[in-house]
Length: 429
Image (cartoon, rainbow, N blue to C red; front, side, top):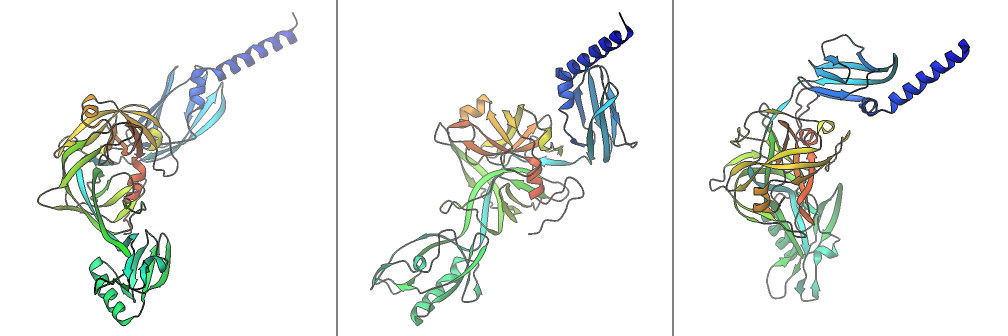
């Protein structure tokens, strides 16, 4: 047997071995490590690897500690900083992973039932109606091109903050026969129009032919608050007007304590609901400065307790959430917060904010018996996994009330004006 043949044989065996190792499950897991990893101080990540694989840290600092044996490689986050982990196979570099270590960040989970009172910018148009005038039935508002969902912000150059300010302008304009000059907010547009009020033939008063409203109220669930800044997040989704179905543009608002009085149990095709009342003392526990797709946000007047998990706990970023058992904090009786079992059925590592990051399923027998699963008013209930706050309940599946969506907590923190990557920043109201 010639040396050339032996050399080729050994080279072929080595090549086949390397290819086999590359297709092995441990190596596939090894190669599936993301190109960028973010950890909080004290966190540790482990990945399986093959015998022939190796990992090294390329930057000499105290940000991470790398440990590995024949089966695993683990990264332990030590202190804030950046590093690089290089993955090697048979001495050849095959992948570089950027490692970013953040300061350990903690918030206090909620679970409390809260009452929400929103004051809108201007007055909201929620419908048209026909005025029975001497010339026939007509809606002056509809004739002026005003649409449902429009917000009247000015009348004759005067800012409008509540409904009581509208009436005097309408009556004065009607008596003088001069049209009102209106400024409207329609989504992101500012529009101007003129409207001539019409007198109802059976009354002495003049009408706009519009149904308007100045505020909205409802209930939901507190998700978290930051003990240092008192900033909070709740609900996990935008509050929309029940008539127009459009997000309510908030000028300001308040949150108060709320007590659950009854539960309308959910069933397939018919989501249930928490029935609740505002606390008798009507104590305002915080303000509302923002109504966004990720919930409502503002500042608390004081610390609040859920009497279950009242200590600050770390959070998980979207790529750190995993499928499997978890718990939610919520109220189903009076104002008592309890922990209930759920399953995170699926989770999506998100690089950019999105409202639907998780699919969850209620598995707790007591909660299923009481509510049928996820009900209206449960939105905002914090999701806890492995001692970390990972997100909030947002929506129920209409045809399966045991299941619904959750939002990742990092996007709610971002909306609250809390920067988990650096120092907390002030939110522009």
